[in-house]
Amino acid sequence: MSELKDYQYQARQIEDMTQHMFRFGEGKISGYAAVFLGCISFLGVLCYQFPSYLTTADLRAAYDGVALQTLLKWVMWGTLLFALLTFMLGNYRRLGAISVLLVLAGFAMGGYTLPVSEIESNNLTLGLDWLLLTLLGSVCIFTFLEKIIPKYREQAVLRPEWQIDLLYFCVNHLLIAVLLLISNHFVSSIFGWAINNDLQQTIQSMPLWLQVILLIISADFVLYWAHRTFHERPVLWRFHAVHHSVEHMDWLAGSRNHIVQTIVDRSLAMLPLYLLGTSKAALDIYVVFAAFQAVLVHANVAIPFGPLKYLLVTPQYHHWHHSTDKPAIDTNYAAHTPLFDRLFNTYHMPRRHWPKEYGTTKRLPRSFLKQLIYPFKRSK
Ligand SMILES: [Zn+2]
Ligand SMILES: [Zn+2]
Image 1 (cartoon, rainbow, N blue to C red):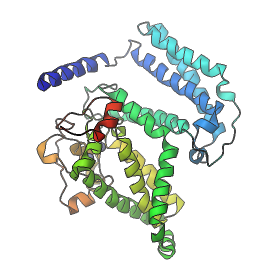
Image 2: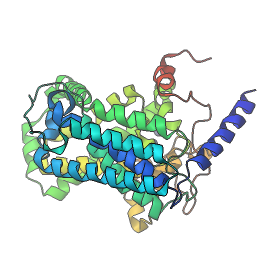
Image 3: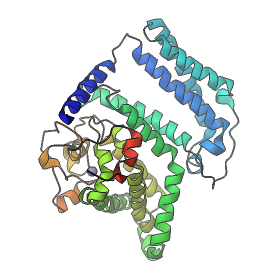
């Protein structure tokens, strides 16, 4: 019975995949682009309208709110341009109409000329600004990469279950302030005693490149063992299985993480950053590198890394970690470099091959809420 269900599910996925194929000249690409940019426009205006509820103080310090209004202006006019194209091509007028309504609502609320107001730095707010900036940047960069150098050329941009993963992406980004608060509190309250000023001063006097390498290796050591423990302890595996339930790899797939896993990972990743006390420049470089690599390794891209593949965790490397092929199960735990997988005998990297299938051997429920409660339900 469950085999029949699996078969029906796979048939639905193939149907879903063909429905979501994009072809030039139909108006579907411009329609989806218009709705996507329309949502960014509307929500972007909301950020300027209600900054003390919807924007994060930490991120606000890093960007120029006035300069971003120029970006918002381009996004709003870009939406209208794509909507016009959609109306001209004809087949997807409803998408064009939705996007025009979103932009008009944005203009009615003040558009891209609202004053940029300050917010209290200790407010616990939603990170809508963080969500919109990373979503816009990620869609532009990774959709482009996945189109010009894909591993699975036939995979649609809107592949099966993209909606669940987008929801995970939104939740993880909206809750940035809460997640930062928890992880900061975790490291400072439990490991505050381990701070060593002499060590931190020595590290800060090192060249920048050496500080960055130190951060990468020490964070990778912590993340390697955290990840391995999530695989080897049955109670923890039920949380981590959510991440492995992805069956179609792309840049969005890496967002699928149970909230408990996200909190644990962020807190543990914070530990070496907190204890080493590197310079701010080194920390910034590491954070950008780690965030970019975490998305890239899930992406549907076949970038030829050459000898760099011996130094860095690549998409092929992490795709093997998600494979259902027996020899690959419980291998390739590292997040940044293959070093600790090699040292602790969990390295699996066939030279030219990529996995045939992804996912878990036992299928998980296929909705955000059911996956949220899955680890807490007693297994049969
Ligand atoms: Zn894993
Ligand atoms: Zn992964």
